[in-house]
Image 1 (cartoon, protein in one colour):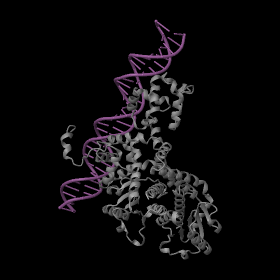
Image 2: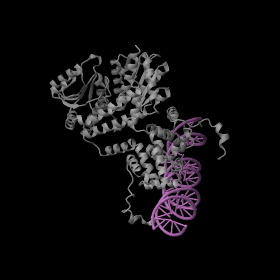
Image 3: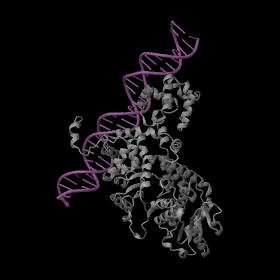
Length: 285
Length: 285
DNA sequence: GCTTATTTAGAATAAAAATTCCAAAATCAC
DNA sequence: GTGATTTTGGAATTTTTATTCTAAATAAGC
């Protein structure tokens, strides 16, 4: 029976190829679960109930959780069409982080192909923007966001600091605050006049900066912090220099296309922040 | 050596205990990242940017992703207070299951928690942005986009005009053009100096305006057109006043949340346009 | 109830991964 | 510059983990 595979395989309708997505996997699981042997069914029930564990557990751990032997896990994987547990786990892992690796490689490929038509480039930015937005929901900590709104709602004046690629974000914040009658100052760096001395202890600063960080932004923010102002930072990674000065950090990971990014996620975060602050302040009037 | 731990540990001031949550981990990372050696910092930046990979990757995979040696990864883990990679990964894996629910469910959950909460508002903007981006591919005519790139690539100087809510778009264009050494002027309206006379017949103007249209933008654009300059318009509807003056129109329909919009689509269109023009011009050099 | 086919448990083995170690390179102090 | 110290790369080693194998147990067919 052990050697019967090669010739008998075409007759074996149950020996299918591996599912390519987790949806396909669970679909197959649902349709075949009740014709599985006892222990395999037991394990099937377990991962149906705990799908999130597959990507981050070992065979032994899952086996223990389902109260079966490791070898039963192996048999189950093979029964589902995988070569073994590793292949099945790979599916679950890639499904989780599919946005990251897939997208990164796709962009790398695009870059190699050199110049593209404007529409193709636009499509890339659209894709990058959509992924960034999707990611935004996980990178922004709701508590930090709430805290940022609190701080900004009670500040006397709100100062916006951010230059170069961050400037579109601060200028949009300025527009929004103006429209909602929130006292806010956009530090634009015009005429090289450094307005940092207008920041008062009861004020708050929204600092927007992405790697490589603009020196001026860090400077002004650090000084504002020293005076006693609250800092809300919109930045890209926790290792940002703003982490050191006890800022409330709102993290945005934006996908780049070449040397540029679409800023979609940053702008969305900024406007949500502004509107929240605006409505809160105007309610308190 | 195996038994040497208990007595030697107290002498080691740098040996801190392992973080117990990922928040604590990233907090420590943020405060200590810049005093790490080169390769360790490099790896720190990588996992700050790709935190979701830690739970589902091996040392070798992460090392490759960050372009460091596996041993550097180990040193990093120990530097952060863990006994090794496995312990660190265990922390990330325990956090993992909370993130499992997919984008759609997360979004729904965020929306539920009170229409007034900042997170719920952010969710609205994210959704609006994603829809706008999706729409963008259909509203922008590839031919018009190609034509716009052609016109801008052969212009002597590119002028950007757009105020108020359109200003983030023009300022980002200005940043992009500057970075690619494309001669471009941002008409910011500063000091109420109207710079429209600097526009020459061989120049081109990118006018960005959304309903209700800013008078100044229409004014300047109309005059530039009269001089003989080419006009590229980024606007929201075909009935825009810019249609009358034979501008190349790039249409963006942006979804609003209340009185505001996330500008995702407009920014994406702008940056794609800028990069296309930039690469074209620099190739022709 | 006996024979045959499946299924199971657990040990044995193979593969892969984490971790340590050390010489070479780089950096720092003087 | 010279010597001491830190950092790095890469191979060697150890540990963990996946996978296979086999004998025992269970179930199915007659």
